[in-house]
Image (cartoon, rainbow, N blue to C red; front, side, top):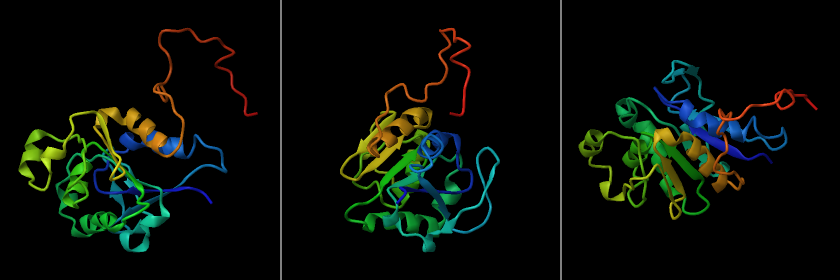
Length: 207
């Protein structure tokens, strides 16, 4: 049976912060080992991403069972105000608290932890976030004593990984490691500008 991850969708979602991770789980794998990635939101309607892509969720919250998934992914969002006021969204996110054992790994980056804080998932969890201090101060449901000033933080007790947006590559690596993949620190680093590649290195065959 293929492994499954669930991506939460909401207006203004940042795609680039999670696509290294989602690409690794899918196109980097063989057909037999690629993950199933489902998307979910409050309604089955088109959602406009931060970079103006239109996304249509696979499911609404009432149609999914969290225990079917090994990973929950929440990406960043520039204007989180509309989402934190979506009662259906926050209620559905908060239902992850009711899973006492074998809860999926929750991986959230950039401003997404404010959604988790509103849902009560970070009440007793250490986390980091990509939020302005003014926004942190303005929302009392954010437990400031739990904030760790690091690019990426994993709270083992709660099985929650959080990261600041600029650490999206590290976020992908650490999430993959927690899922059992052996990735080096320089994974996804791209081309080396300080070396000259030979034509043979840049010639590719399907088989």
